[in-house]
Image (tube, rainbow over all chains, first blue to last red):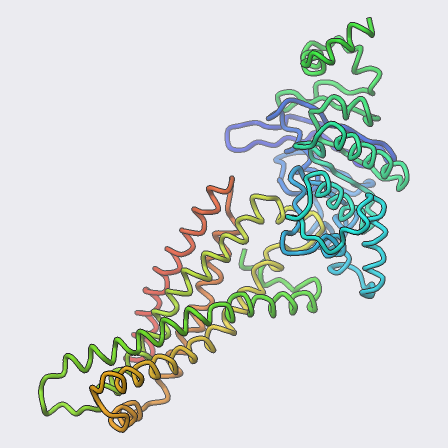
Length: 251
Length: 234
């Protein structure tokens, strides 16, 4: 479980996050949604320690991450997997080496054990046979799946996904969404997905938080979100014609 | 950043592999340009010296002597360092800068890897280790280039040239050149890594970081060249 308490972050004069508090439950896909520039990626980066908030606490299973020393943070980070918006695969390594990378850095596994684990992870994301390819030789959807395989290689307790569907076609997006959802349930991990894709929210969101202007605006589940009376959230959810049609049908 | 770079590595075997790879990337791949530059510069120094000796009382071996001194004291350690600042420095800055803007460095951090140490330390070690070898090869080839041109153009005989390159030889000059090289190796790799690591923004910024890395490391080489010479040679 991850708890965020009264988190605030600014860049110079610009206040990006204001007093955000939330609980992200194990075994659930926790979605953070909001417009571009609303602060959702900054929130995720504060939670994993890539940004340093001015105020607040981030607790991983009750331990305050922000107050830890570097060694303690490293231990927590071994339990965190992250899927970046642009996949962030290492260009100079093959698919297999990318997946094996955290294992080579932090485990005492033998080469054959690491290869076996990488194979398992790639098989789980349906990429068997692509071990020897370089990231530049793979499609955007494959890169996301490789990044997921790398993120789960260390069997993490926490999985962060920053806009996992950006730049993907609708069908591939559903594949990635389902993969994130299924892994969350199978591995019983705390998953946090940053997104502004309403299809994903409806598809896999268990717990949803809407951020607007750096503040927590709304929180609920996917049934609540479709019937919300919150104006800003309504504008966000029903921005597309497709969602407006859904709303008409619901009425 | 320096403190993080020199923090104890997570796994020595990985850093060792990285360092070997960097030696290849930084050093071995620069051999061609270093060899080409050195041979031609040695040849040009020999030709220019010969063409400027008009007085009959100046011995012919002066060509060999001047070529050796110019190559060892200044050309190989400093001019080659400036060339390497361009080639290696821009390569390092753009490689690390691209990793920064594509969030690969963030990915390392999330995994718990000390990204500064993992990416920069092997480059610094590789640079400081391999640059002296490159410079020694450059010295040899520069003097060799001077000899080739002396024979080809017939300005002086091999005997005179060989006598010149042996005349008043002080091994300390080699040590002085290698001390400079060690410092320049550190300067090039660390400054380029710094600008790459702190790249912000997009691909445009990567280009800017690369340019800054070359400019600042070149300026530092020139300043340190003066300081080291003043301290050691004078």
